[in-house]
Image 1: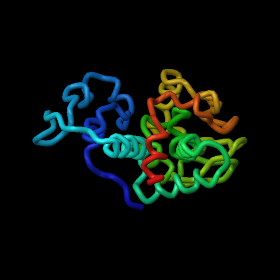
Image 2 (image 1 turned 180 degrees about the vertical axis):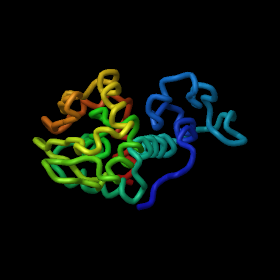
Image 3 (image 1 turned 90 degrees about the horizontal axis):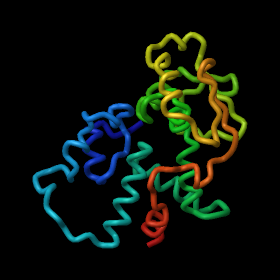
Image 4 (image 1 turned 30 degrees about the horizontal axis):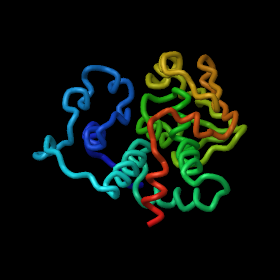
Length: 208
C-alpha cells in the first residue's frame, strides 16, 4: 500500500499547524514546527496572496495528512460520507475517526497514527477475538480491541500504559490500560473531535 515516507515535520510546517505526526516528540522543544514555524522551502518566509480555493485546499490537505490518508482514498471517504444521512462534513470526520489505526492511536496503544498503522500491519491487535492487520478497517459500535497476549511484552506496547494515563481517551471509547483492552462505546460525534478542523471547507472544495 502506498504511503507518504518523507519528513513528517515538513507537513506540519506546510500546513502552518501542528498535526502531531510524531507523537510525544511534538510536545517537546525538539518539534521542528516550534523552531521553524514557517512554510518549508526557499521562499517559505514570503507572504503570498491566499485565494478561497487555496484555503479550502489547505484544509483538505491538513486533514488528509493528519490521518495519513492518500488523495484517492480520502476522496472515496468523502463520496461515502456524501451518500450517508446527516451532515457530510461530520460523516467524513466520523469515517476517518473510526479507522482501526486511528482508534488504536486514540486508545493510547501507539504514540502516533503512523506507529499504530505499523503495529496493526504486524498483527499485534485482535478485534472481537480475531487477529486484524488492515489499518483502514472500519470499527463499529460494540467492537472490542485487545493486544495479543504474546505481544504485550513488546516495548512499544509496554509504553502504551504511560501514554494512556497521560493523554486520556475520548468519550466514545473506553480503555482498560492494565489489560490493554479498548471498546468502541458509540459512534463519534463532532464534539468529540477537538482538533481545529473546518470540515465545511472540504465539502465546498469537493462540491465544485
